[in-house]
Amino acid sequence: MLTALLLALFSQHIYAATDIKTDPHAEVFKASNYPSATACASCHQKIFSEWSASNHAYASISPMFHKFEQAVNDLTSGTMGSFCVRCHQQVGTQRGEPREQPLWERSAIGREGVTCITCHRVNESFGKVNGQRTVQAAPINAPIYNSGRAKALNQVIAEKDFYQVSTNPDEAGTPIHVGAIKFDQIKQSEFCVSCHQVQVNLGIKLEVVWDQYRSSPAASKGVTCQDCHMGKVPGKAEGYDKGPIAIVNGRAVGDSNEKHSNHMFYGPGYPIAHPGLFPFNPRSTKWSIKDWLSFNYRAPWGETSWEDKLSKGEVSKPTFPDIWSKPADRIQARTVIDQNIVMLNYKRKSRLDVMENGSKLDGPFFDSDLKVNKKLKFRYKVSNTDEGHNLPSGSLGAQPEIWLNVALLDPNGKRVWESGYVDSNGDMADNHSLKVASKEVPFDSQLFNLQSKFLTTNVKGTDREMYLPVNFDVDQLPMLRPAGQPTSVLNHPPFVRMEARSLPPNSSRDAVYEVPAELIKMPGKYRLQARLRSRAEPIYFMKFVGATLDMERSINEWMIDIHPYAAEFSVKP
Image 1 (tube, one colour):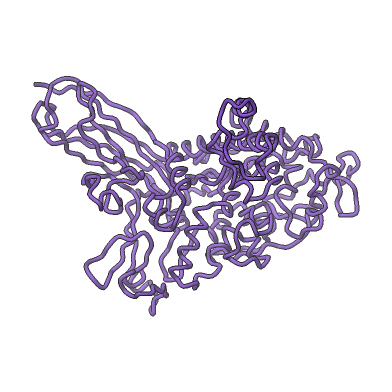
Image 2 (image 1 turned 30 degrees about the vertical axis):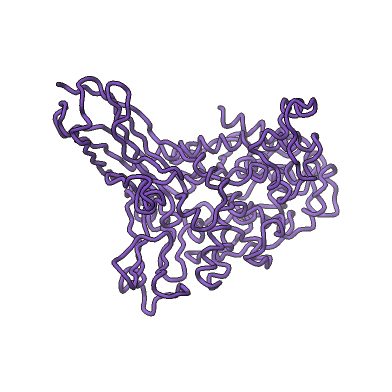
């Protein structure tokens, strides 16, 4: 299987020599009460490889998170405090790292985001508390909390010399935990709630993943979050892969038919960080975050053929930062990036699988005569086949985008009509498009868009859609305060609400279109091309929070087309 092969190659290439005697970080890991995921990787290579490209590993690295978090804190005059970082950087926050501390000044474990101990060192059941869980501080040798008791671990401990492991800091060998304590909630959907059901301080829900799930067909059938997001098929509850629970210094531990939970945590999210910083690659730690940010990965730096031409004077020499002045360093850095790109491509495929496994596009269905000089009326049927969440799911408020792009080509192959087109920034041509506002691009009046919107009531004019639930016209200095009365009275905070357009589980909606008669000029075969498009962030919102041009470019590069296909039909004279 391709995915298993990629993971195996990636982990084997990096972790072939993770013996404690050769690992320069081993002493740090042994002494730490917050062990790094790298410490777990020596025995759980496959799990580490999966996690390294996951959104959990990305939580702290994400440049968009940092831009968004800073914008929200600015708008709330700092009153949001550690609200966001206690999920995205939970261990760092628990260690006392300030929310505003730059990524390059944070601890190594703080930069790992939702790391191994964020889940496996939690021993209390938490509910909807917006990420305020407690990670048990303990060295690597302390027990972990898991869905089972790791029975095979007793064999490893009983034969420590054979497996070359240590159970306390004074022994030589690969350090391991001395036991696994069964913690039932870790295999239940409720374990995910504290970070995936989020209500912001003024009383509006930024994420409603749990609300959607608990009333879904999946929940009523007993299907858990883990079944779809950690199983063998992205987004579907079709069982789990099998394999040994660990490989300790080259020796498999446990039954080869042990249940394997995929720690990539399949989902619709995707990374736009520098590929030297993400996925999490131990070889990248040779250089600092600032060093990596100065490496122009879009240029051919470090590519063997280009470096050879550079040495012969066949290409012009760029002005390299001092850290990248040596060809050997550039080549080594490019090797890290190439390894990471392999994992990113695997992640891109799993993301597309999630989206296609949870949706369906049917059509076109014609509602008019197919004749020259007649209006062409047709529709497509968009269905959410996911039984656990809406389409798109209820994360990040008004940011996730899914829309339908349909284009009509005449018998000469000329595009004569389109809906769902984007402007030069990459935004849909709706009310938020900066190019529509400047009249450079026509407004798309037939746009089929499943993106939710924040609506605010302002001092001047009627309700308006906003990027964030902020009433900018109310005060010169916006202050987001909770309502004076329970939000249950109004069912939303005063002056702010969310207009959901997403599709509930097992539901569908028609996208209805009409092409003007004057565009159907000639008889013959016409072609309709359709695709659902998905992106995590609108470009207008990225500009609003101060994203860089490279971030905007990356998010457009990661946009995916779901169920793309074409249909031909004949127009009669």
